[in-house]
Image 1 (tube, rainbow, N blue to C red):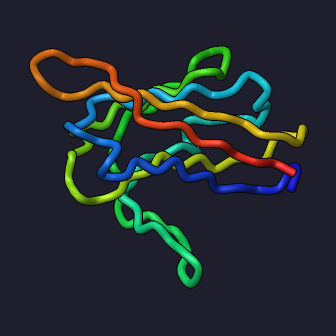
Image 2: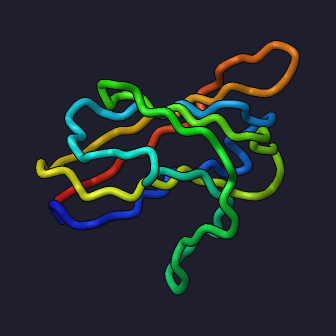
Length: 130
């Protein structure tokens, strides 16, 4: 629904992470005109819900969050690297939906921990606003 309050989870599943992550970068679509504020963005360990249970954060992961001036890029720097374990993590956005309906595609890259920090593709998410 347009202009409804929304909590958007961008999941980072164990299969998406080969190594620990020092940095997560999310590319925000140009047409996604919701107001993003860094205090409404978080990184947490999640329990992914399903038919009978809701998705919820189990534990907040402390991180520095930076939003580019044009609002097209979101950089998250966890204080400790996000581990490559069997747990699922998520970037959580608390926003009001944009005024325009449509499909919005978000892309994520992660900078791996290691001797040579290399940026890897983590995944894409398509959000539908109707």
